[in-house]
Length: 127
Image (cartoon, rainbow, N blue to C red):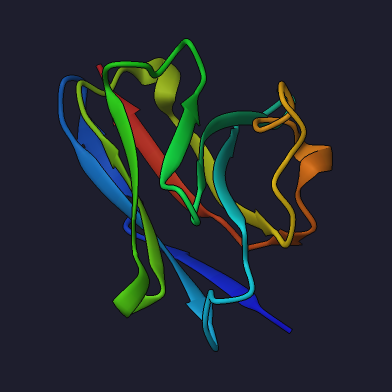
């Protein structure tokens, strides 16, 4: 059973950057797709970015395109989310999620496409 552990959250000022990490234990070899989601208080969980590990292809929510980058390091069993130009609207609990299948087209950023979830890491952005 693969477990995911997020890290890297914290508090930054608007315009700042953070890099989140999602480590797979014991490994990520069996995983096909890894995604980042976020959930702010009182809001639904929304997909932010996803990467298909086999080909390295990725998808992004419109709200983070050009600011966030998802990447992976197979040797470290880790997927990263580099977040730049952060705004208070980016503040949320960020979750890593994965699946053993490639999501159908158009579903890469839907919660129902993922079966394994981490516990989350908090991101706060002050104006």
